Amino acid sequence: MRKPLYLLFSIAPLFTSCVAVGAAAAGILISQEVLDNNIYVATLDRDADTVWASTKVALSRASLKPIDTQEDIRQATAEIDDAKVTVGVETYDLNRSTLRVSARKYGVNNGEIAKMVYDKILQELDK
Image 1 (spheres, rainbow, N blue to C red):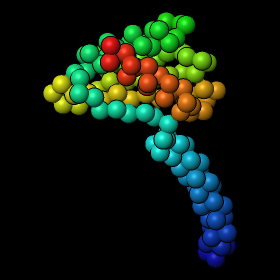
Image 2 (spheres, rainbow, N blue to C red; image 1 turned 180 degrees about the vertical axis):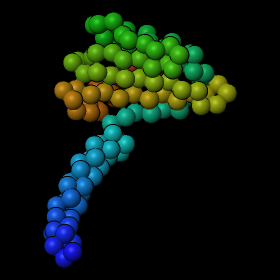
Image 3 (cartoon, helix red, strand yellow; image 1 turned 45 degrees about the vertical axis):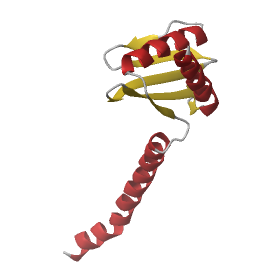
């Protein structure tokens, strides 16, 4: 009886260290996505349909390739300066909406390109 217990206690640290390493790797991945400060968000005093139309116009002008839109959730993806830019428009309140812009270049978040696209969309809304 002692040998199986001794064996169990001797290999238990091996399993806990594997779990700790796996948990740490998952924590790094979640932190990168959730705590990212390279996403530009604006709450606008315009309805979501107007912001969505201006977003598509601004993305079409900035991208050399066609943009990919999902009309039902008001999300668009475009390739701008070798970066994948994702823009989402949500209804916030009556005649208010939320604009969210993010960009990834070579697999890394790129705040500079996201800010550039964000500014272009806001300029398009001012027209």
